Image 1: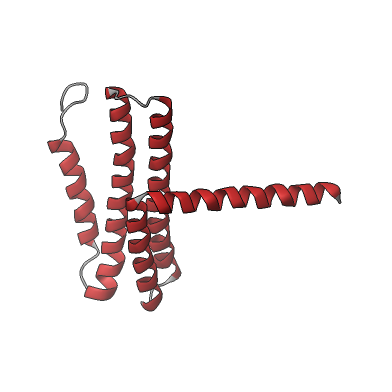
Image 2: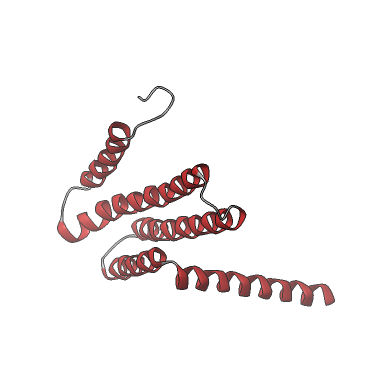
Length: 151
């Protein structure tokens, strides 16, 4: 019986710490607040449309993925700032890559939203979502500089 009580207390403490972290990222990170608002609009819109379970799952996944990546980006930035408060080119590169992860998740969400909401609300072909994904990848390929052989 004692083990169960201790386990429950540990779980409650862990949950409390997690909620504190969630509130901290929401309070301090403007982009997280914006993404939370957009995600809320997407999820509420999805509720009012006649979407099947799979489409609802994809919308939910896309929203949560962006929030997750933004929170991880914040963790990476905070840790790097703590460990290396002075300017460092490599730290800047790591932060840029971390921000790129959020961008990729955001584009993924736009693709999902275009496919599902575009078809359901505007009756547009779901292929437009794929066109957005292709355009993003083409942008990366042709407008980025660097790599081993710059190609």
